[in-house]
Image (cartoon, rainbow, N blue to C red):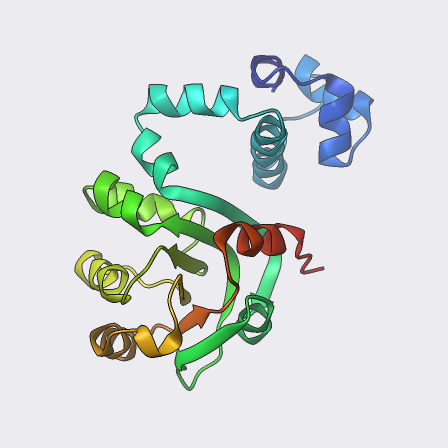
Length: 214
């Protein structure tokens, strides 16, 4: 933990605050006086490092991304977030001012969302291994495709890669502009399909960042 904390340039006291523990607990983990943290603590640790780096411009994470060869993925993602608890899909659709295009009979919930630049994704992502990164830690999430003209390409890609998010959101077009093929594919795959009527991507991303499911 100490190695990565120092690599990201974060003080021990700041990390403790981000994790919601005392500085002495962090010190004990780093010195080995306390048993290795469990998977939940490790997950919070990683998320805290990345989010703190984002506030500072994301320089460290971008460097790591280049080293790991996932820069094309990062260029395709506007924002990405995991929720601490599952969020009812109806509440999420209301939050993003969504209009239903296909609503399956069974209820869904999501554990996070990814806002995707559709143009960049088509240009940069070349296979299943890269495309699946859009799902983060769970397929039970909303994939929000921006800069969409008809909605065909995102739905065709999901069909080809055989990946099923719990919600697909199209942004950048009116509900009546969505191609029938996109709606038909949503029905075939059983994926809820919505158009967000929030005017621009920046407002959408900010609204979702400020949303607290707790």
